[in-house]
Image: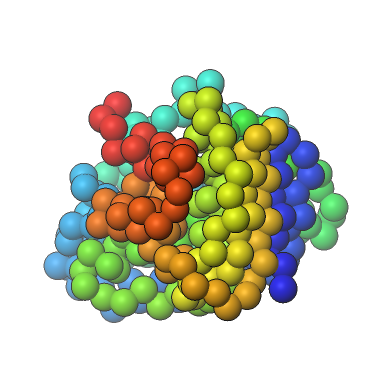
Length: 268
């Protein structure tokens, strides 16, 4: 069963309606978990070394509030966006916010974002926005926002010793986009990868990745062996505890796909 086909440059095959269903389930589930947080939970450290749980959730709010428009350059590296710096600057605007207000903001913004995106899909809107790897269909941005949300949910929960109550489909989407953007970042360093990765567990399947001419990724959901998909997604995003999982890949593939995580962990 195919999950998606991503391509840049070019047209991606992405069932955005289904992605929004999975996105809504992920976000509402996380909001429910956060409703049970006490003061110590909100102040607890996360896998983001400089951010508490409250900081991470405020960041998710900042990203959720983003409303793309045709030709938008908010996430364009050439326009000054730096994922190591810019999100910290955004956080300054909510520095005095109480956790209860952050949670209310996250819940409201999530529903607004989902409704806006669904409306654009019904209207058949087509336009490009700029992501860190270049211009892409705005629907791919929805997958980018989901990936960011899913990774940061893990940053909060796993650091507190809690389980991440993710779904099989959510893990598949997050892993797919993690591989796609990691290959795009590798290409920015002049490196290419062509490899069929077999990943196991939730989100597992065959991930066919090719960055020899642009970046292409197709995902087929089948039961297979290999490293766990969720751990691969963590490693690609530079979460250090999971980095060794990439050792299962050939050296050239590992080097290329590690560039993004290395960038995230390099001081600005």
